[in-house]
Image 1 (tube, rainbow, N blue to C red):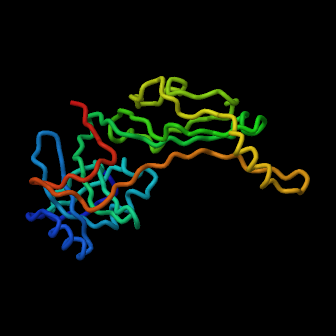
Image 2: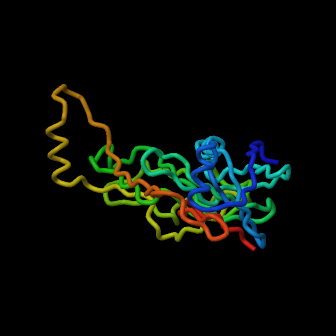
Image 3: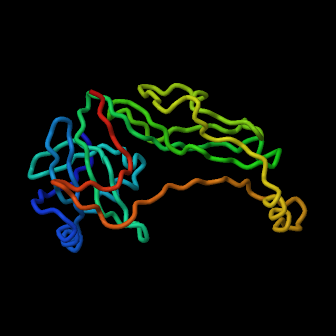
Length: 239
């Protein structure tokens, strides 16, 4: 059984006003989903959910939701953040069966300094930061590590180039580019030259082009029977 237990409360009322009152009490609204089960509106502590999101496994963490004394093993289905301060506004959960595969998104981590950066002065363009995979809940990897040490300028690494993962199937199309090394644009070269130190032997750190994620905006949306926040990362159970 999961080591993390989050206490949840049933909630009967829905809507923006109700959600605001919950937040003044230090809680946020959410919904518990499950295969062939009616969605259950509930309220949880944003601090507990925030701790889970900051853990190594992040939104793919398995934990128990204690609802009125009944524990259910769940995974975060969706969550919504306030766009300025990043406070949690809403969290949805999906009840999982430990013997049935799930489809989730897993973060990519690039390792190594490419030849194209170290020797040829290129720039790493990190194109794909998450991959969709399928595995049993307990086999979901914390991250997928991709070695880019051998990349030269103009070269790339695709999903199809990755080594097979134990007990995990990568669902993202094999032609998808994860990262490549590109030649710096003329204005970047000029800017680097202007900023370069005069001390002999000094070198500049290689640059990485970063593509950040868009954050959710505004209040949690109105609900029709249950809250439906902006999608973050959907978990699909294979039937």
